[in-house]
Amino acid sequence: MNHTFLTLVPKKEGATSLVDFRPIACCNFLYKIITHLMCRRMEGIMQGLVSQNQAAFIKGRSIAEHSLLAHEMVREFSKPGGMKACVKLDLRKAYDTVNREFLCHLMLAMGFDERWIERVRECICSPTFSVLIQGTPHGYFRSNRGLRQGDPLSPYLFTLVMEYFTCMMDTAVHSKRIVPLFRLVRPVVSYLIYADDLLVLLQPSMRRMRALSDIMEEFGGFLDYS
View (cartoon, rainbow, N blue to C red):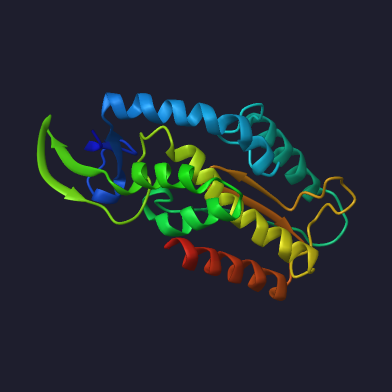
């Protein structure tokens, strides 16, 4: 039931290299019904678990609102008042590099029931794959990390993974390793998350930029990101 066909979708016109393609998982129909029901269960609690800095995949939130907020904050850069820095970060192959065991430990720390975590573990750790080449399946193999693009559960689980990054950033702001640009705004906005894209706004200095680099390196170490 959890066998998956992988098809490669080009990210751009005239793609030739393997990195120019995005693997999309064509999951079993029965599996999708089960995971859609699981998503409906998770949908009701995601708002309480995920900070306002994340907009994607959360019912009642809109990426468009975050885009407008980012636009207004960047407009402030043209006004006098000291140096400002805006750092845009893109997590390369974000879904593919998620450490599944770390995700399960994270869910346990967030208060998910152990039986629910075991169901999720079964969904993300048991799939087998074949690659569709000109419509014909080839090969049969397993994977040892990552979430499948095309799995209904993946967006919710990846959002939980990114919530760990928000905890790291909030800790850095509270300890003043990173100083946000707009401290007079309530709530304080120092970063915005759009799925696997991050926008960080901070008062620049070598020490603060190094702190941001250390956070990203630590985050990558937990989750096998590069």
